[in-house]
Image 1 (cartoon, rainbow, N blue to C red):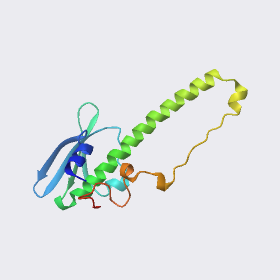
Image 2 (image 1 turned 135 degrees about the vertical axis):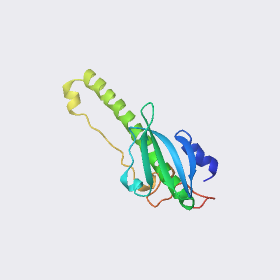
Image 3 (image 1 turned 120 degrees about the vertical axis):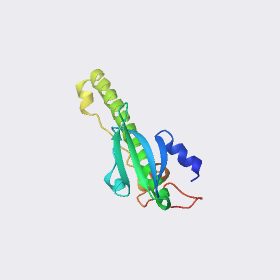
Image 4 (image 1 turned 180 degrees about the vertical axis):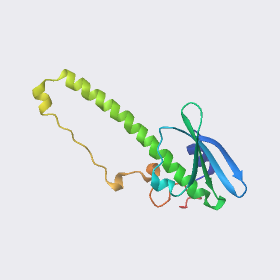
Length: 145
């Protein structure tokens, strides 16, 4: 992945990139509602401070030769939370649709109401969007990190 593509992913959340002696610190601003899955946090050194406007300033520190791995994990955190937010919006929308349906449909018809859920197989999932568990995601020169 090119530097421009990395910046495009990080830009909405990027506060700064700093050099701390022999370390790099990626300072990002995330909503306080975002979660950081333990399996991802185990790979990072993270500190958080409350910022303004309901935001959390998250500093992720790494050594320069591990920055590609760090950026990959940051990307996964961002995609994880964007997916959660979209699911929440979809859930609220579907609940609203169900309320309208229950308000306008008679009881006998509602008793026969069924839900058919399409279950996605692994081959249908988009690894670019969700990342993978083997620390791939952000790439250098078209090769995995």
